[in-house]
Length: 67
Length: 151
Image (cartoon, chains in turn blue, brown):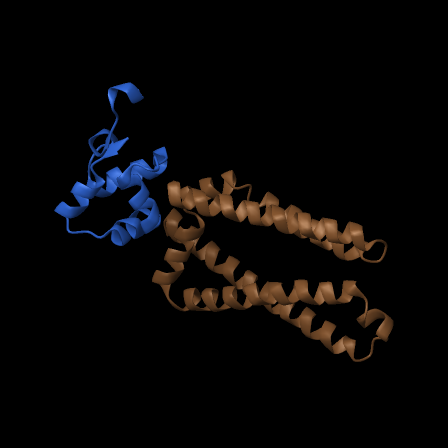
């Protein structure tokens, strides 16, 4: 699953650590989500999307074959 | 107070409880080593006694490192929150679950304890139990490290 987290973070000049602290996770998890190694759970995806003021589908991009 | 703050406050209490448990472990070790002076050589020279002391010493080392970590966290709210996030991180929880933690740790500890008791009856059984427990713990650790790298 692709995400726009890195792009959104850079726009807001946020480090992975700062984002992790804000959404209640660790820097390593943010790294894994950004690189596509780990798929965030629904509650974490919701917290990340809410942090950026967006909807989940605007942050996490589902590809057609994944649906 | 929101849910997150309530969780953090609960976690703070939990850390205090863990600190007390670590101190208790230290006390047990000190009492056991002090008792050595009064115990008969038949007890102190038994392999089970050395095994128990070694097992406790390992536990003490972990307790000492944990106590230092908890003390730092209890003094600083940012560190406390990061430690809370670390312990409740969903990715780490998934990794631990796949590596069989905490069940392998519980089984490993139970097998080592059984191994120490078995020294009174058969050294072969005792060594088999202890070696199997250590192998099980090593496999679990290896799986955890591999998943931390790939997940």
